[in-house]
Image 1 (tube, rainbow, N blue to C red):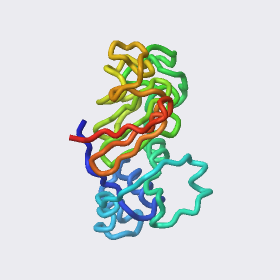
Image 2 (cartoon, helix red, strand yellow):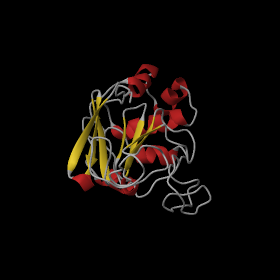
Image 3 (cartoon, helix red, strand yellow):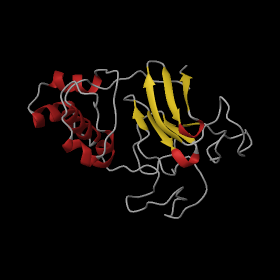
Image 4 (cartoon, rainbow, N blue to C red):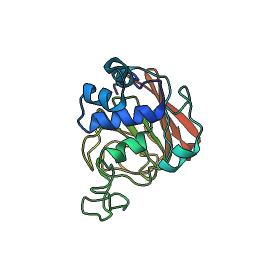
Length: 211
């Protein structure tokens, strides 16, 4: 699996969120600079600078936390997704079924749906990683999703997008833990060229080396 370098800016997380949301909404760099009364070079820096860490909190946590410009939380991805009108795992914002079949009805596992992803989410600024807890897999979008119910590009822990077996034995059946499978993963993080997955059901962390 190829991992993109981390390209998230290292400034005020609230301002990062606002600028990324504006950019995703179609504003140009100059329009964003005018809106926020910032030099265009500063806006570009927010969009292009790199950091070593980022995390996710809920919209309610955001206002309660004491965030400083160098706090560990650098990008408010959950708010970013919602503000730009996207939902992953469901075909619209009013559906909340597990393994949505595309009609707001629970169905089979696919590249488009999720089952209890909780907070296992990470982005390096290019790719998006989601720990799909009850499907015992991690889904990877190689570029940040631009539409609702968008299919993932890569799956970890399963041999294809239609399997969701814990400790997949390679035939979509449950087996013993291996280097290839997962059991209820609940966290994902990138460090350099390595992706680290918290494999809760197997009481371990798996480290994937990027290409």
